[in-house]
Length: 362
Length: 202
Ligand code: SF4
Ligand code: SF4
Ligand code: SF4
Image 1 (cartoon, protein in one colour):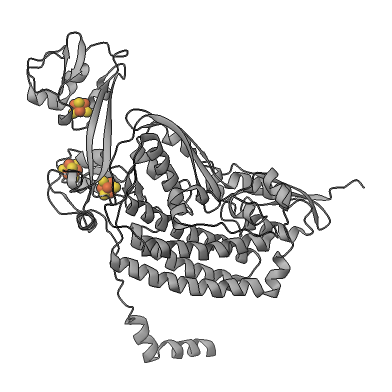
Image 2 (spheres, rainbow over the protein chains, first blue to last red; image 1 turned 45 degrees about the vertical axis):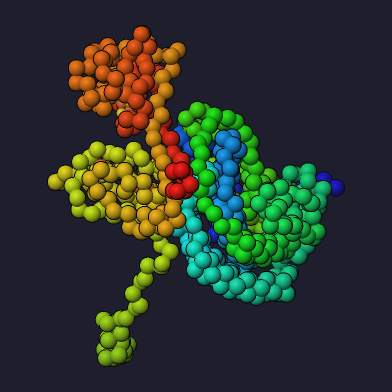
């Protein structure tokens, strides 16, 4: 039967549920969505161009301004790429502290994503609970790095500040609180009948579709893609012992649940780091040299790649950033929203893939 | 009318008035882990711009003209609280907030210096860089117009038809040479290294 398009419904660029401007065009037949199209380009920053020709110590601050939600990982991937170019070694204590900062950032990012989702399906109570918990996490990020969002915590060859035993104890106490609260929120989410009605079986993406669309991060893991967590290949994470979370349902519910489960995994990782924090210096020193590399790390949303070329002065000549949301947003439009039963589910499906437009339009 | 009386009665209750005018909120406390921003000490700024040149964060500090002189201004959204400006200022205009306490506690520091490089393919030996350099001129006021100098103490001079760099460590990173060079042949780069004091010194 030939499908006929009744009407094309635009969602966005400004939408109360969306964190940033993006436009979604949905072609519908009655309630049914036949096809969706994503339109980007409302807030292109041109940050890669701004970075070119600047010394690393300036680029590093620009890098973490690509995205305010996962700024720590941008900092980390850029710095580790520079270290790879220049053969700089990181002292073990600094490597562990980096993991702590990165995981705190991941928790904050995942909670924000789940907040967005709950807000979209109009479960505002749970949404506000989640935001409340996120505050504690951000406070701890400040305790470690001195800032809540743009931390600039890592520098080539080490980190900026040390973690004192007193602060570590306070952090562990806060994390226990966060874990308890998150258990409660997860239970609410897992068992809520109305949440299930709006999430289970909606926005389904099969494993094949996920692989074909090159999705990354929790979006791919919720569809059962194995080995897509780049932390599995990071030496420090391997030392700590790391297994990735996967689910097989591939629907909105699974994507949110993967993030909830990863929060607990991150809390465990931070605990392990703090318990086994090696003694020693936090800075190794070293200069940035000329070279070229492509380095990838696992951002909260998936694989994040920096391709950098530097000159003798440690200046960045060329830089290209590949952020995870690019693939996820496309996959979302072409695999999840296509043939959705109701236009009402489009927003929540889109949000469940945790789209980050700031990353996309860097 | 009744409602106005009702409102007046409501808002003239002594308890309400007391709460409205003498509200007691707990004073905001700075958390122990807050690292602070550089603050002004009140010393006079000479506008040497050392602080701006060393600052690694784009647009975090600017030295602005005020009615009676110059004054550095820190933009908190950009400042990353490294404390480099405090260490760089020769006049003690800035004080560190708590930043230097933290770096002292951790035994960490930044080392930075300026790296000069002349591209011999681009350089046409005009000597502009050597003459314009303020440090060079202070060391050797008699510096010849072609950039040659008899002093061995200058940062750079034209020697045997090419620019030779003698004392890179004296460079203050003002980049005058870079802007004066017609061919962009000389480049000044700030090299920064994060080190652990004690380990690095031995
Ligand atoms: S503390 Fe550092 S970042 Fe802030 S103004 Fe001074 S030099 Fe710049
Ligand atoms: S380094 Fe000190 S004297 Fe020089 S411009 Fe900055 S604040 Fe003023
Ligand atoms: S940067 Fe300034 S001090 Fe350094 S060599 Fe050039 S002109 Fe001289």
